[in-house]
Length: 185
Ligand code: OFO
Image (tube, rainbow, N blue to C red; front, side):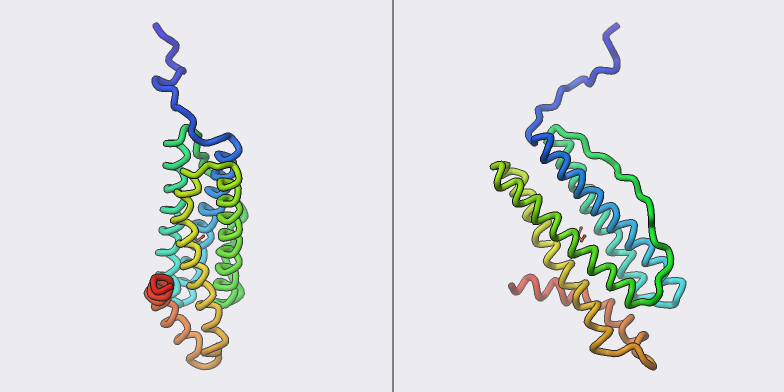
């Protein structure tokens, strides 16, 4: 009887350990984004911000899809994608504005991390991973645009009277807006 613990196939590694570790770091950020936005969506729903809630549920799904893209890439390249721990999830928020301020902060952090990864791949001549990451570069541009517009709505419309209701409605239109703007660039 052969040793059952050995894998049937030994994958050929096409990314370095360092790149694998950086990609796993990126998985953490995408997983956090998905978890944070899910928690925010739930809070919005409990507060009557239904459109923002739907927007954030959808955004949470998208972030999970980004995380899965990285899982597939790392494992196909001979590495091991790791499910990150999810701790310190914030469940309640001071206001709708705080939700979108935090969303923008997180998107900026994700963009920085993607840029560092791209820079690392270029410097180490890992052009396959560099190429794979271009999708994330474009996606971050779009997501940062959406998050910035969301935050701007609070100053543009104002939160008094029916302001918050209107902001909630406008948030539902942001994805279509950002897709149009980034495509025309
Ligand atoms: Fe994964 O796109 Fe934003 O964070």
